[in-house]
Length: 249
Image (cartoon, rainbow, N blue to C red; front, side, top):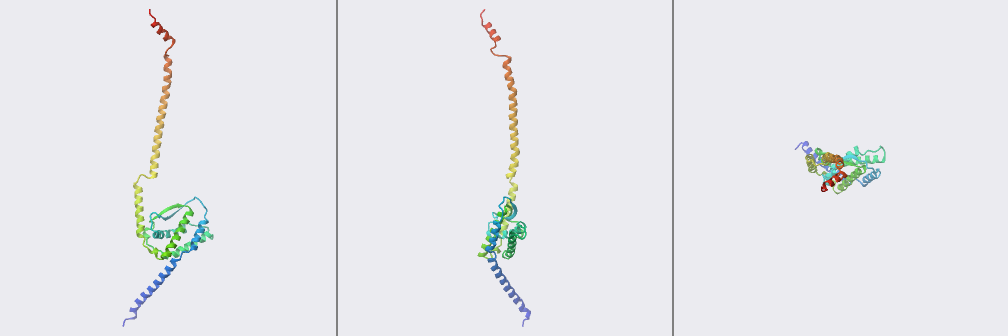
């Protein structure tokens, strides 16, 4: 007969499989309806309560022009939204807006189980700095939660997609763009710095030429005025002399 320990391994393995399957089913059930309409309503109220202003704030967010895959875009945006709510979106304690932020932060913590982490080495890929108003920032955050809600309803496991290839493309495009900007001298700032001194030099040269011509003309005019007075043409003396020469002897 086999010792009792021989059967212990398979039994433990079976128990682990049952527990893991149960946990997976629980995660799937939670992810499908974790974001409710109430959360989106809170976000809309937060947007409506903002003062319209032209003042802008700086924050890091996903560059959708670089990352056009909707699933990978939301995977990247999810973590950035967490950072924004913690570092950028600050309201006075115990106010309605502050309570909404706390609820959204708690929701984000629960949503972590629905996302796989597969881009630790490329945490800045596909990300750039935005300069927008607080209203525009809140619209971005609401859009992230709304799109995440819609995709999770269709497939609770959709955010387990591996996005390393998409993020790597962003990194390569970013390096190519930086290299092109560094090697291309025809940049707006460079052109501006080059043209302004050239224009100033041209204007100075034209101004100097005009001044020289005007000064030269002013010296020539008095001489032209004085020369006829020295030998007046057709004077009485010269006319009388001419007559005497013309008379016959």
